[in-house]
Length: 622
Image 1 (tube, rainbow, N blue to C red):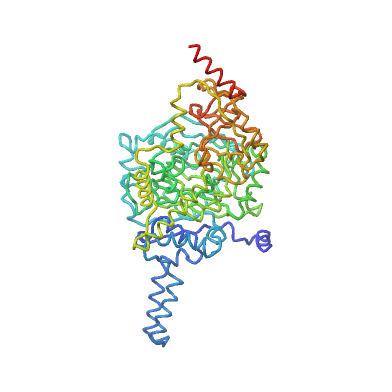
Image 2 (cartoon, helix red, strand yellow):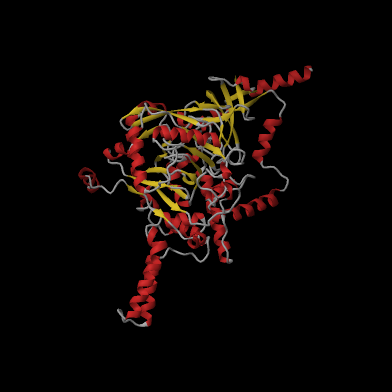
């Protein structure tokens, strides 16, 4: 009620700038990336400016007071007071880098500490970190944060970089409610894209380049953008989601976007990759004036980091996670047609509501200006959007910390595209528990384990334990691929509907259906009698409405890892088929590659006894 009164009276603290952090190089090197995020961006007890800059001034003032004799206290009293001041002003400093991560996750689980999502910092939805001078060598960008120097001209490595398929953002809507149609255009080299961006900005703003990055000038550009935005505005171009990185392998004090220390790396323990493609792999973004990134949350409610390498600033807006449900309801009312087609339509990144609409609806949001050298970190479940004020180059990726798990369990997946990110949360939590147990043992020996170190040790253990042997699931998959039979009969399992809001039922590769192990004896008998003829499918035979049989790996059933389910092809996209299973909701559909060795055509019901007799008769005849 108090918050509502503030909004109605026009005295609300929102919108307000999101918190910003300016650590010194010493403080920056003291913590790992994951520890920095968890200690400074999530904890309420650490204030950004007091932590890094004002603590030295406070110490000096206290020393002066002691020298002047303003406070006559004994030596023990001085020591106690100094300890109290250090607890208030200084950040929690772990004796070892990895202790903070491990002890923090233990407190969340064992000591019943309050949920970090309830902290005031978390409610900002995002935070800005201005990285200190010297944190990386900037060789990847030619030590030029304008992207206009000699190393960015035609004939150079950077200048001739190809911007693949820039997106033309065609705008429709008016009055603060906008929808974008995205059209792919021809690839273009970076110099030509920059020239196009400069010419576009001159037509829209009157200046090709603006060197004034002050708050006052950014405020003027912000008002100009929202006032001009509409269907009559010339469509800008945005080079988004391009694979690549400008860090060129530099460690960058652990903040290299290409190789961040993140607990998501635990999911790669059973693979030969260091990154999860499409999740923790870095993407490049090339913007121009007026190009926008529409309101969205990250896949699986992950955290994200966006570092602005060079060029003009970006303007950011973030809705407080507390108001995310209200924001979704507001968006559904304005984009009803999109909401009917897909409950997760905001993940399509085509819908935009102006800050004025949010303020009228009483939705709390924060703002921030990202200048070259700044990193923006968005929090789990926070809707964020914004626009570019000119030609710029940014790099972004997703990451996670253990505090992300509650938000991940609430995440929903958009099934409109085969490449939507899905993470098996039960598998992830099991890996995280194993890591924490091993890390605790390592700390007792004097040194903790990083996520990468643990993964290397686990892979060595697996190689020693398995040797040249192949796991049961891999053997069965190879058997399906290597078999020369064009058709065979197989037992079909009836799927059980998974929990509506449990994304853990959707693995990183496919949705896992549970076998009917808890059914009654009669239903078990009926399922066992359901045998189908599986016919090896060609790419041309997988068409919409085709009846198919799909083998799915069930992580919960160790005795029978591959189970066969009957479904229907709903649609085709990018070489993938969307399979719908009878009796399940549309949200539980899965995407399978049409060339997968686990996809077969359904040849209808078969009697295994009669089928075996027929095959035996054919062999005897030959």
